[in-house]
Length: 99
Image (cartoon, rainbow, N blue to C red; front, top):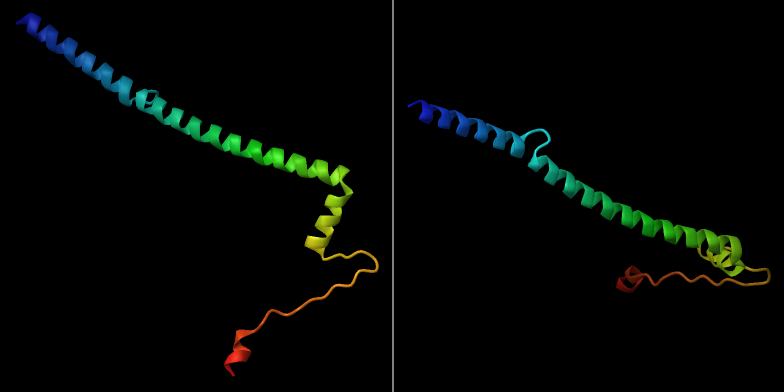
């Protein structure tokens, strides 16, 4: 009878230890969540590194390439060279056709 009781106590302790190892604050489930989070962080980090490279290239172009600066000035600021004439046309309006 004592052996059975000892066996049940040992099994109970083993079960409790297993549950704590699996579900505890620093258990296996927590470890799996951390690994998943680390993967997501690494992926975000790679994306940021790519964006950083694009921005570094843009900075390099802005510092070294006059044509690139001119292109940006034309597109974003609407600037023109001296002596250029700009023609602007209104898009066709479909409402005028209906009347």
